[in-house]
Amino acid sequence: MKDAADIAPRTANAGKFSDPDVTAKGEPRAHVALTRAETLWFNTGTLCNIECENCYILSSPTNDALVYITEAEVTEYLDQIEARKWPVREIAFTGGEPFMNPQMIGMARAALARGYDVLILTNAMRPMMRKSMRAGIIELNDAYPGKMTFRISVDHWSEDLHDKERGKGALARTLEGMDWLRDTGVPMAVAGRTVWGESEAEGRAGYARLYAERGYAIDAADPGATVLFPEMDEEAEVPEITTGCWDILGTSPDAVMCASSRMVVKRKGAARPAVLACTLLPYAPEFELGETLAEAERQVSLNHPHCAKFCVLGGASCSA
Image (cartoon, rainbow, N blue to C red; front, side):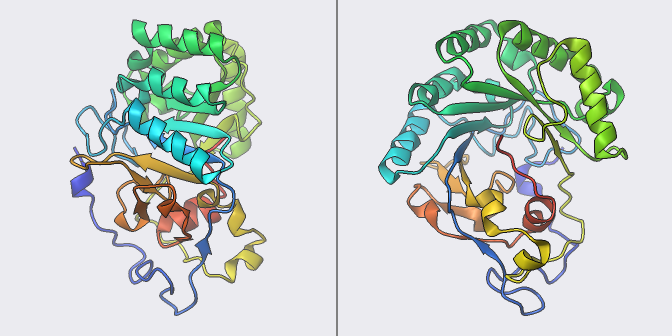
């Protein structure tokens, strides 16, 4: 099993993504400023109840490279949002599996109590379905109706392909959790993948059939409700993003995820959490911006293959 300490160095993109300011061709590298801080992410810890075939963060039942963040630590960053006057509308929780963290309900409650929308990324399996977690979810959904959304990891709408990624029987257990959320009235979204050799239209049609069969109030055609992510392959050859790319691509730095979000993590052995530029690069030290939101206000160099393939060229965003 891979762990965070044993990630192999990239062999693709040789000579690229080494200088934060200049590309391999000597052109000025693109940077992105935090222009509209709309989402603050918290990684609840890398421990997960399952180990997926291609997990970008290497979550597993044994990987605790990112340890459980606490309600007190989350509350401290909520205080910082108010002190910095960030225009945050959404607090989002990811993992690992967030419901492995015993303080998940308390952390969500702390954000909801301050008026934020809450997004929780989960596989909707056994950790979420524990009696204490279900009781907490019901309590929060009743107290803050419509303010909390669960984005469920459904890698593919078919059992065969989903289970190929997550293990035999995984989809059935996830659907059991989704059925409970449906019956409880908790708003749901879905995160899937686009690596199955089918067109986006075919994929969305498959999700639409699944939703109709199960009675899920999820829009398969809405990219914010059914988010389809490309595979994050660090070995793929990708172009570097220069300052001239924005006009060529017809896009803007403001459209990139790091213009509107930051993520807080707690590294194993660290005294305090740290703020990262990107949810997708938890192990890249050059994307760690400091311990505070004030430090995290600086611009980000697009100095990683994921910046190009996933965010700029793919147009992806982890927020709703």
